[in-house]
Length: 351
Image (cartoon, rainbow, N blue to C red; front, side, top):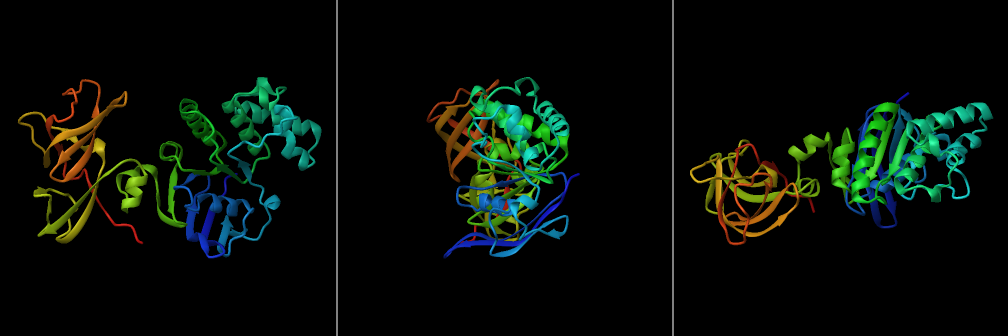
């Protein structure tokens, strides 16, 4: 059975330092939520408060509308996977997975059946007799997941579970973790500072900074419609264009910009993703055009990353490598173009 989770004005202070500042958040039953933010943003403190290891100084934590703020960790019945997996080195894989069931004094026959089911779930049924040190990092992570799920927890909490893995294995485990979530149907709450991981895993992402919840929503909505400069800059890469609106028309760097949601008057800050900028061929036009010269470029396999000097300032553009219309070179004169709805107006971040 899946459970809904709610935070209502959760606050945590350490002396004069406010680690979490009035965070309110709703997680639907069966959803995969990721708490995303830089170091010191409060995401791990929030996870520890949900787990019961940290008592908030203010606010409430609710599970299916029942206040669990003061409930000790052992009575919350939450599974948890730590960054370092925390496996017992002297136990076999099967014994590690069985440990939560032994603590609950479950009978031997039922315990063995649940362990087999949990190992099947993470595709490790053939490795039950091995010790953790005989396993790869990815296999150890699967054991930790099996141990956290074996007792049918109300929630599964994940504290940067993929951070110890190399890039290729991390990408593979992201797919497996997402598939595992679909199979078990539980509510997952994940903590990471990795933007790609948050986008690929989650139904919902909550972006935090300096202990405050900045924006929450589905990954695509956050990426396409960031509310602030911080969100746009932290979740992927973005160019920022400072413009002034006059009569619904934007002016920046001596260029008139066509913007779908331009205000009538006043200063405007636009976020423009590099992949939404096109390299224009001779004679080709677009809603917005900026001439420039390539300052620098790098080859990334799937494409080229260009930094182009323009009247708007340096712009970063992403150019697909397959059938690229040009061979990038420093100093090469080019024209960049983008549609009227490519950029989005964002707010400056509060001090």
